[in-house]
Length: 392
Image (cartoon, rainbow, N blue to C red; front, top):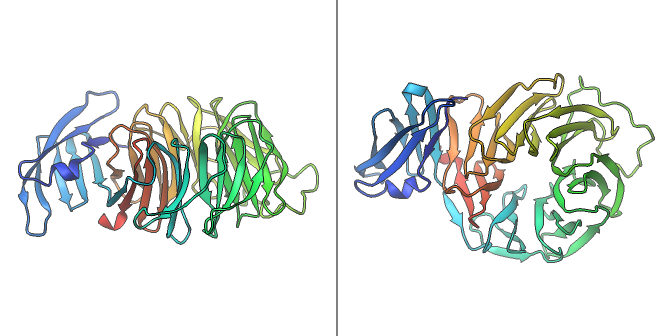
């Protein structure tokens, strides 16, 4: 990865007026940072500013919501994308999690203001308030149908809600500590949860029963992911016959991002180990990119890309800053990552530049969700931002 470029968080507003300025910087690893600025020389007839960069930086292209900058000396290049819209009225405090329904119509989010809400994805208009957890809700997501929500809270409870009338239809109890992340298996007859109590559990939604403890690792499980395994991967066989209530667990891997610096992979149905990888710091999040490639992010800013077929050494390690990696999401032929310093970026294989989603000013971006060409982020500053990739 080339040296990261950074830009003033509100650059799009700053450059909209004559002689408006915004700062720029380039951060080559192990070398002094380079600093520069952008200046607006006037607004074109199409409403797009004419922008020049100070010495050492080049403006390759500019639109209303995006600007592509290069720093030739470090052969670094980035496209910065400003939010298309910002929703400020959903929550009053830090937003810890969000998701968008499969049809793109609804969003769900949880906040340290103690609420979990369903809202219209197009305009942020409030639709439903989901009340029932005691203490904060840590994670929330839609089932594939888009009509039902799964949430996990500090009250050690996992709940299923109707997005249509906000009723809580199922409550799962069994964890002894707060639930930090969840994953949905296939269409959602079964779900997985990871908790501060060090266990990952599999649940039967139809009977609101626990189908078993998948792992008990004695360390907080910060993130979980379920993925279909490439058929070259040996997932092992279950020691006893799986319950007929287990649906869609065969040929799937379960990934656990653990507080004790370990990334654990096991067969979801077999419960047998596939690998255990030790990282540089606590693992916060993880996701599958394919049937054998995965990503996991650490508290000290490393994004490890691993191949399940040879997990001893990472395929690559991306390190852009020492800020915690807070979320990772597979996207097109690459991924989107967000960090504790407010950075949120898209890496795509066929592009020689990184796309930076701007707007957060040093406030952690906790979660990212996508629907078609739209990307939604939630941040400690209490805002949901929506980016339009057609702006690229």
